[in-house]
Length: 507
Ligand code: SF4
Image 1 (tube, rainbow, N blue to C red):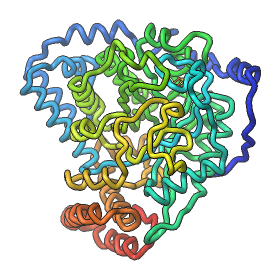
Image 2 (image 1 turned 180 degrees about the horizontal axis):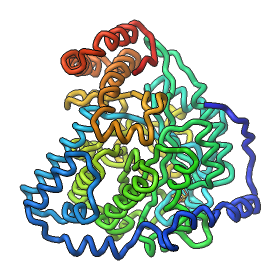
Image 3 (image 1 turned 90 degrees about the vertical axis):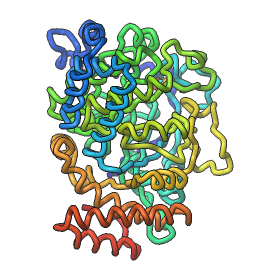
């Protein structure tokens, strides 16, 4: 990562207006339209949903077999799964989703933390606490020293190696700010119990950008670039995102990942915000998005997220949204996404409460966060353990520590992976697609998961977590010895070096 210089300055309303005026480049949308049409065809989605309402068990089982071969499902096949009601078939779907996840990702769960760097935003999304018109929100953008302090806590006290860094859409947090803050995060190295801690991968959640800015981000070096469409249903989108704001332009957001790919960012994360419109439509649309990226670039989404709308400070829309997704529907939609896009990573976040996270993890999730604080400056503000509603985008459902979550995962037989080797070794884009579909990525990941888990236990684990974690490590080492004898010796060399205090060894 490189560090650009950035002077944080206060922006006037006229600065903001000037910045907003030129953000959207129509030619960077039009070039991707097909005869003027976008890849989301609501009629086709409705047709698929209304013609596959009562699938025969035999048909459902054929679809499940296709998923197990790690092939992306068609819209009709996905609509069939959405409509399954029979409890026995639903149980088979859940079982197959778990099998698909194990086939592609084994028993690993990747953990990360969100890091919000500012809550200034020029947009006015009806469901968001950061919206411009929310006068009850305390606004703040972190300077580079404050960013370093946040990172010191995350990397030195909690033990995270991977962040999703979140930026609002505002000239004070523009692409230069993003570049310099990523540099500041990457520079922090903190002494730990047995070695040292550092953030090794920054995924970025930011507003859609023009290609030129995305090229800069690609040069700086980022992990996954994440933009959520919020809702793919255009009339709903236009109702919730006022015209005249940047976000009010549905197509500018819809083609954000096309521009990212064009700029060389081949690791992208997509997802709807569930609760804004009918979840069935959104699942179908996110599938269409994956199919479009696969067809046009040969690379599907590295991750799909499925956040549900949560209450936000002084934001009445979030209190009782018409399309709120019930827990049983939530579990079903996660199962269907896992089956429909079998190679993708799936992220369940601390928006959801601890019990629900326990229940949905086995349906095919691959990543989760812990020790999360989403108030601006929330990590370094150690005196304040509570959530700070007037500095947050929404309220969290699960504030458990990383140690608690890691311990619980280990008790359930999962290994928490802190591996960040993939993108640092160039295993991204088409390379990772091939490895995931063939189950080969798991080979590297298994080795790196054990090494990074060892690091984390030695540097940050509580006695209880170390005790449970040792059992998981012993099982993993035995599997590597029997299943991957050709690399076992080298693996054990790295493992012993890590135990002795060496850090950041990976395959
Ligand atoms: S959802 Fe994003 S773009 Fe919309 S108001 Fe909130 S921070 Fe701004």
